[in-house]
Image 1 (tube, rainbow, N blue to C red):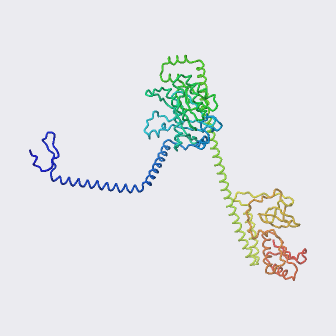
Image 2: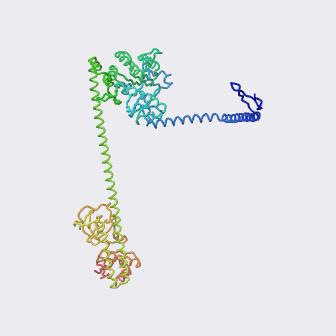
Image 3: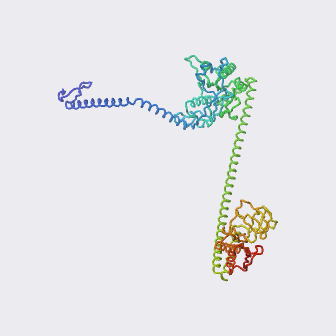
Length: 631
């Protein structure tokens, strides 16, 4: 009744008709504005999207390539993260059994090894070798990332196996739930991972070939809808493999020949495996059939292996032992899982006698294999301990030798340092003594003579100090025994206090090598020394100034051909050297000529503080002046 009280548009009413929904007229204008703005917004969005689409369309090829690259990078990152979670390594891709080319096929070569004709392609089986391999889904880190619940808290036991080369077939036996099927799946999955460029969860050095096809018959494919039993389902899968086999191929067969009569199933399993082997496939099969085990142990090119168990509890160890067939442990497993003991005992009595003997023999072999494994593990541990001890001993010896060399080098450096210090002190003392002599010569007095005598005493003391070198910890050498002079022998010059090697004997003169220098010394002034010649490489510390060492062995001075100004300094030097060598006589050879040189020498020697007497030498008949020095 109040519908006209509010002017506006009626949009509806309630179910009873007592209420109406009215849009007041002032709101109509506002709603119209809102609708208009929404239309404008939609048109602007369409415009912007159209413009962006146009821009993207212009760069469609580049964006497509970028998307492909991002996809590849994402895949590589996923592969890397998966490898990290698995602790995976890069496998070695085997070069054996490489893929056949289409050209080889066209030329008449076939990958079917059962085909006749001489054009058949023949190759050794590709090498597949896994070391400490693990199934990816059993690795804790990866299963947690994928959200797969773990059935056991134990870490997976890695498997090590080898197929290929001379043995293209591996038959694995052992107890139920022992790890046979997991081993098959591990080999197949890791082969596919390697061919997809993934790292595999196995130890370094694992080797995987490139297969053209990988075939697997694993698990129970029985189907009521398809009217397939366990046996027929397995057989249908194997029939399809025989039709499609393309080498190089990997064939994985789980419980081959199972699901039917054991005798016929065993024979059929052997025939199937041998068929694939003859056609050049790499085959890995698991079995419980005794006939299959015997086939694996007696056929060239077929290897056998088995999963072990604890002989006390019959629990599986999941360790694969190569080269030996294993027991299925059906009765032991039944007993362990709780089957009544009477039933198990009755089953034992019903075993065929030959089968029982074969089982007993296998048990004995397995026990021997386990003992060998334990012995091998103990030997390996002892070998590692010996290697560690040897390495420790080698390191100790190396450190001892290094420390010894270091100490010897430090001692040598200290010895050289002290020797150099002693030589430097001696050289300083000699230099000071020489300066005293020069000063005393200029003084030409009795006091000067005394000073020169004291200087000579200082020089001899310095020589003694340098040669004995008490601070070096070296004891003075004993006086060597006398011997005849001979070329190559040793000789001692008492006046100089040196020992050298005799180089030559020239009449009254002897050429001597001392400290790497050659001296000519009168034969009368030296004595031979017994013993071997000094080493040419021996290091000697010179304690005499170099400008005086060369003339220390000379007792004469030759002035022939010299002027007076050149001759007198030589005479003065010869007198000083004679004083240093504790000589009492110097021969001055001046020749005859006009007599000016002889007179100049006589005048120089007259009144010299160290000259006791001067006379003409009879051997030179006036061409030689002999100078006698004071004590």
